[in-house]
Amino acid sequence: MASHDFAIIGGGIVGLSAGLALGRRFPNAKILVLEKEACWAQHQSGHNSGIIHSGIYYKPGSLKARFAREGNRAMVEFCNEHGIPHEVCGKVIVATEQKELPLLENLYARGLENRVNVVKISPPAVREIEPHVRCLAGLKVSTTGIVDYAQVCRKYAELIQEQGGSLQLCQKVEKIIDAGPEKIIRTQRGEFRARFLINCGGLHSDRLARLGGVDPKAKIVPFRGEYYQLVPDRRFLVKHLIYPVPDPAFPFLGVHFTRMIDGAIHAGPNAVLSFKREGYRKSDFNFLDFAEVLTFGGFWKLARKHMSVGWKEIVRSFSKAAFVRSLQRIIPEVQSEDLIPAQSGVRAQALMEDGRLIDDFLILHGRQAIHVCNAPSPAATASLEIGKAIAVEVPEIGFARTVSFATADTAHL
Ligand SMILES: Cc1cc2nc3c(=O)[nH]c(=O)nc-3n(C[C@H](O)[C@H](O)[C@H](O)COP(=O)(O)OP(=O)(O)OC[C@H]3O[C@@H](n4cnc5c(N)ncnc54)[C@H](O)[C@@H]3O)c2cc1C
Image (cartoon, helix red, strand yellow):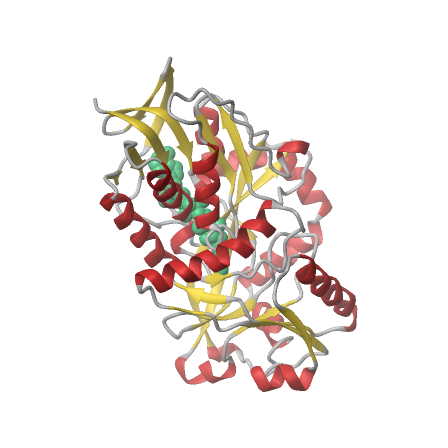
């Protein structure tokens, strides 16, 4: 059984980026990536909106704010360097009702605080960019872009391999044993040894943390994001990226219009509780996943607090008419027959026992281990920065250095 310096669980964008960064920091280290699926980016990293976020939304000083802004630049640079198709097309965020105007104002102030390139624009100026939008006021963010993150992941994997890393697909980690100076990582197909473990398991990251002896005091709750796409002859309704003003009580951005890098126009995603962690269809159900949510006190506290929003999301998930009405608030011309269902994604969102959704990235430390326990959007944008942060935080050879990596949220866990 070969021994490795670092074993990374998870071949999504965060795990692969960690592998890349570790290989750059420790060129002689033996790096192993274990992924349970047969290809990279089979879950969140391959089922998302493909936005290179600017960093406007996030609480100033948070990891999300820092890593998104710097990650945006790094991602664009990476795509340029490796010839990955992308476009910095900018986006508009629009208020369509009076009550959203103060929220838009707050978002503008937050953007400035986060040093994002954002300007206020009038409705006629919005229509110069997006002729079919109806709104009362808008913001223009010029650094937002689009890319296919699955393609980015494949490039990360290729580079890890070039650095000498070992990439193992179809290896589902089932057990982690602390064996003194090493960890033994057992999959359904074999055993691996490593001196340091990095858990980037996305939708399963909380379970993997527990397997590794760390209680994140939070549970991953899967929220499915469902999309429609515009039929080709109605794509003219959207030029770039059009977002509503998000509800500040939630970490989701509200259904929006996104031009994908392949030219398709997606509308969505909503945010509806999934009955399976990797449940991409409404009918997907897994007894263990569902029972875990229902027996978690934090879920009921969240449900009580946001009952009406949760109910509206369920209605919007089952009723195309309700989904279309949300979109018509931004583009009144959109009609039900313009939209066909598109592939959905499932967000891994960590929820605390007190019913609060963890807003920031959550990165915890165990003995000779780092566990990434909350890496929702904009973690794809921020992946290169998250990877770098992990590589900086692992101890030097010999693992003598004490690791301490507080996140905004570790404090209140
Ligand atoms: C609908 C939606 C829209 C989004 N839009 C955007 C966007 O526009 N821009 C943006 O920046 N971010 C966006 N995000 C967020 C972004 O996609 C995620 O933050 C990011 O992909 C998280 O990457 P990850 O590597 O942590 O997780 P994942 O991509 O889920 O990877 C985790 C990997 O771990 C593997 N794994 C799990 N358990 C095991 C095990 N036991 N053994 C081995 N392997 C295991 C899984 O198979 C998986 O491949 C969106 C997410 C969703 C769902």
